[in-house]
Picture (cartoon, each protein chain N blue to C red):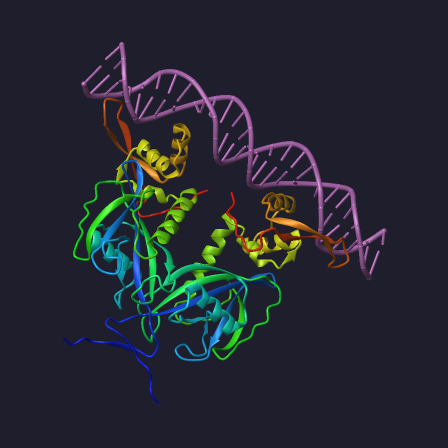
Length: 225
Length: 225
DNA sequence: TCAAAAGTGTTTGCTATACACCCATGA
DNA sequence: TCATGGGTGTATAGCAAACACTTTTGA
């Protein structure tokens, strides 16, 4: 078997992207991991991600790997940080550009493919042992998520197309892990001028139906305060 | 002439670090550029930076290149963002991990070495044409700096070891480009509990001398509000 | 009519802002 | 004594937090 070789005058590191995908399921912050099908760390859980194609944009690589390994697509992606400690990958020097993503808490069909033998959601508080330095990447991503709650509307990305104010409040209560005052929360949420009524009502149970809202700019994260 | 080649089964991009160094000089926000000694963009101004050694930590690379090309060392460094658009370097695929740094407004001796033919400060508002996508990197860095003014004590890094409250206020006024109320600024600055009196007084001119302050934790950037 | 979640205002405390004069020094 | 920047307090307005009851619905 012939093998093409790519040669350089100086040693080059490999470049990968990894994606920390957060969602809210079962009233908990959860994140998406894949079980590695190959060495190194075969059988360990890891972040979805993989090697950058030589003509591929970084964000495009993150999007592609996420879709290939888990079936997740069309989500909010933001560059997090780049991790490149020598020795973080036993094979060769690998620089990983990490992204983080928030996906709505709807049912997502996970489609593990050849690249990964399995894909599953794990509560952020109960993670299995992870491959590489992925625990560090996750800690960084979680810190960034929590920090951005205070000065942006990033958490709205956890919600599906339409939602009720109670669902929005639930999302925030789960993220900050404390109960919030209903009247104050509603005043705050409406004052942001980021959401608008659809005019519909949603019935879920034997009680008064709730007004349905949607984001005025679905793709925009606003800075607040 | 023999040339060692480093070969890989798949093409690898090159990885560089670039550093956006801000300071305040002549009552303006300025940044440090080097004139490129070699192609591509020979003679153009560019950010200090260069190729990652294969066993070198990313931040270490940024620190080293900054020192080699400009003589600047011992400064606050923070990872900014990674830029990797295909085609951003005409030679080969290059992924650049950008850092930004704030240096005190004291006199810094710039020591251009073999890597760069020249190093100089430019006002952030009046930059020359730049090599690669360095204008984009600088815009990102500037945006981050301005954003962090609101929720961190990052701007304190612009000040030398000791300083007066008027000097601190000058720094903020230059950065936000507006006059600030002296009494309110002092109340705010002291309430942060980040600075302490040294007990000294500083005379600069025919008027009352000012109290001298220093950071209580020189190396710490605090999040505020 | 009961259970369950939706919806709604006012009061209070705190933080941010506006604002003007005296102080210490060297020439 | 004058010019220059250093240093100080109070009053007000706007925002954030605390807090309880009525409404609507299906069973």
